[in-house]
Image 1 (spheres, helix red, strand yellow):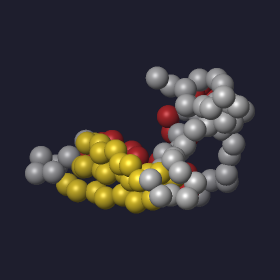
Image 2: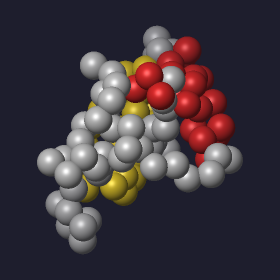
Image 3: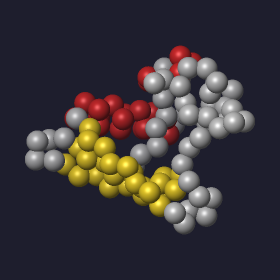
Amino acid sequence: MNAWNIDIHGNVKASTVVGWQIAIEETGGTLLRSEFSVDPDLANISALQFRLNSEQATQIGAQLIAASHQPPTSLAAGARKTDRAYGRAQQRHMVR
């Protein structure tokens, strides 16, 4: 699955991240809990939990640092296409 999730208007669907936690497993893996809300008033909070290996954690961290120094971009125009225009190194992910 390479395409961004979009709504009926072609806009990228995204939830607002309201918090996160990171823990290191005994095996060296990283656990990431991302708390988010789909409500504009941020009242209804949900969470997803991920297990990352060290390479994934390093790559995500590096991509977040790189993305934080880039000018804002609009994905709406490219959302109808696959992520070819947004290759792996340019992907923006919201985690803390």
